[in-house]
Amino acid sequence: MTTGLNHIHTMNMIQTSERRERSRAARRDAFLDATRELIEEHGIEALTIKAVAERVDCAVGTLYTYFSSKGALVAALQAEAITRLGAAYSRAADRLEDDLATLAIDVDTAALARLVAFGRSIIAVGQVLPEEYRLQQRLLSAQTGYDDDDLALVAPVAFAVLARPERLLREAAALGVIDDGDAFDRTIAWVAGINGVLTLASVQWPGADGFDPAALADMLHLNLLRGWGAEPGALAAADAAVPRSRMAALLDGSDR
Image (tube, rainbow, N blue to C red):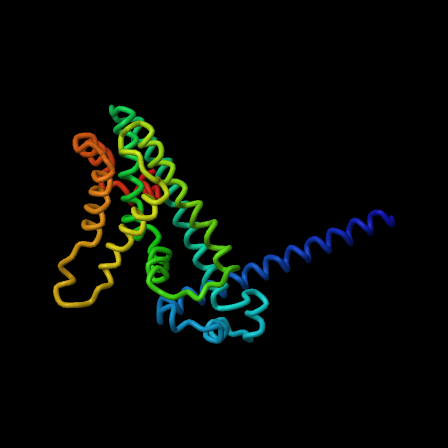
């Protein structure tokens, strides 16, 4: 009997602990959702801990039990957004392999096609994950106020995503599809360049609406690959194997 009561007591404690964890996770998500909404509405510069607490209808002190500062709150939100973007890039890469398997292309062209696809994933991901994309674009051009602990949260997530294009560049260079070069530096220039051109979408001055940021970003992306030694004929074949119109479907799997 005593053993049975002890077992029931233990199970009750476990269930209570699980409920608390679910409740805490739900509250944390509510804080992140409120932060995302406020950044969308007013920008990162206007974000305050007090505004987030008011949006969730809780005391400021309660919020501080979850996040130690505005920087910590934004870092958690950014890490979450990067994780979702990275998952979309991974889905696109996996589905691209199915596409490439059906095409009669050689190993070198396939290696270039993977590079073309990654660059176009960055350009197209805003169609699939618009909130995460807009958040990243805002954070790229804003002072986030991160301290070392905040950077320690965001950096590993960001570098995990950047590891994919860095590996693709190394593989292409090993095949002789592009020239040898520092794959990490190229990755940073590649991703930053594409994102920089895409920020033209937010430019507000006469004539700016005549720009097609996605087309300009794609032109830059392909020109970088040419500059790194991609042979024009092989790049044209890779371009045809991964058309821009295909990328949104690869990212979200809408046609699967």
